[in-house]
Amino acid sequence: MESDIKNGNENQQIVFLKKKNYKQLIFYQKTVCLYDITYYFTEHFLRKGDRTIDQMVQAARSGKQNIIEGTEAAMTSLETELKLNNVARASLGELLADYEDYARVRGLALWGDEHPRSARLRNFCYSHNQPEDYSNLLPQLSDEEIVNVAVTLIHQVDSAMGKYIKVLQDNFAKNGGLREKMSKIRKETRTGGE
Image 1 (cartoon, rainbow, N blue to C red):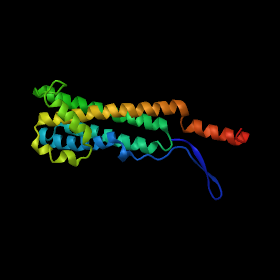
Image 2: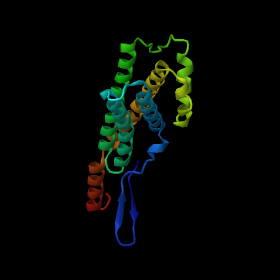
Image 3: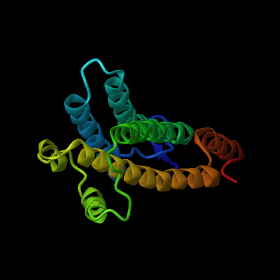
């Protein structure tokens, strides 16, 4: 994310931030899985016409899409990237509440650390980040099992995004955003780089 100046043929092109590839972010990959799981879950376990279907699918989509938009915006604004990543986390928090509500009102268990399948599920979700890792499993799982897969993934995404956002915040505090970098370059240009 370091700024540098490249000399063009006739003018200078200033590159402030390097382009990021959101598809390489593990937490983004997990949100794609979450979207697919949520789509499957709402189609198979909620009644047609239930408004929760749209809300859950949109929350899963918003989590995924805001990571994309934030990463793309990072080219010009760390502030926007931070904001959109926090929006993504908030959307996934909403999705988490929907899954927890579903389990609570139906008397399904949310697998805590003491549950015999919990550690295995966490390990599976930790090491599986592609939609196809889950798509073949979903038809074999009960609603309780899918809820726990989704909840586990949401917690893993939230943890990873928290660390990522902390790095962005530290970088912003240390280096500033686009405006600060532009001001620094203008100042250096005016003073001859002194």
